[in-house]
Image (cartoon, rainbow, N blue to C red):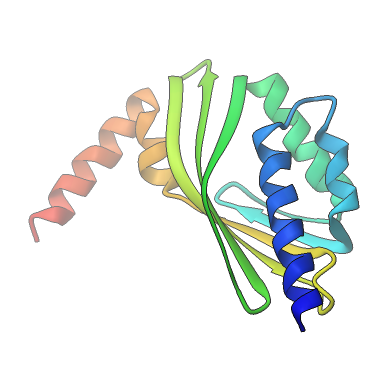
Length: 148
């Protein structure tokens, strides 16, 4: 059992480092850490398979300037791992973009690979709310709901 926990801890640490050092040259390194049926979900998309996820992550370098993750916390509970992180980038429409999120990942039974990654962060406030016209509408609706 300790071998599985050791593999999970090592893999989660490597996964955190992968995101912290992510670049167009390193994006394909994901394939060595995930299963062939790896599932990835964030507020914008759901993907299956390492090649689709790598293509999606690589696109961040053409859609934004200086995308960067800083992992601030990590934890493991059973077959799940958790990473809390801060993301920053410059986006044409909204300028400097920074927010905090959390990723939940699952491991294979032997702890050697990741089988899924689900991001949790508030896209309404942290993305759509920053868009010029849509942001105004979202902020107005949020204030109205907050007074109920």
